[in-house]
Amino acid sequence: MTPPIFNETQRFRQVWIWAILLGVTGLAGGIMAYQLLNDPETSIRELIIPLGILVFVNGLFFSMRLTTRLDASSLTFTYFPFLRKKVYPFSELASMELIAYNGLLEYGGWGIKWNGDCWSYTTGGTHGILIKTKDKKFLLGTQKPEKVREAIVHFMEIKSGSHGN
Image 1: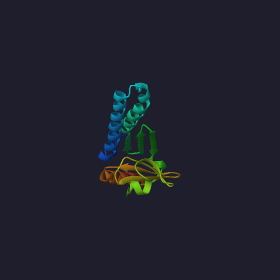
Image 2: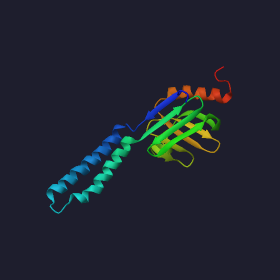
Image 3: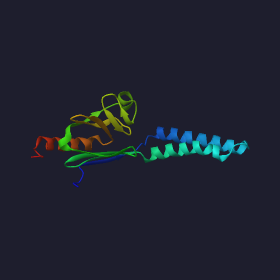
Image 4: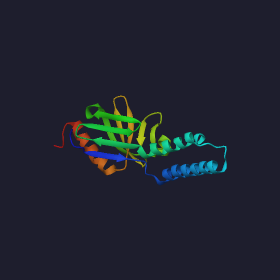
């Protein structure tokens, strides 16, 4: 495997997301504890499913990550735990460009989204790599637009056959 030209792993790190998740979890946990302590009719079994859902959602957000890798011959990305490794040799890619986008307005938010024209795989931010193949178009979010720009120059050199010469 050739060394990467670009490699990035992103997670949901927005404070507001974690404030909402942990706030809802704390509030629900407090309500459940109050219910257990003050209502002798309540059994712990009644609270296991809601508690399990909260733990699952928090664990899911904690584990989610978008990994993007460009090497000398291919683009590889994963969106764990939803999307296994996708590999696109440069020969299958028609174009790749760095774009600025508005995740909320153009895709309805961040994460894995479809806007009717293009799939979006993002964790936040306003920059992405717009990739087109013969029959697909998708966007990979990035927090490193300058590094992506360098990798795209390399991609374009390879596609043109000049290889930097």
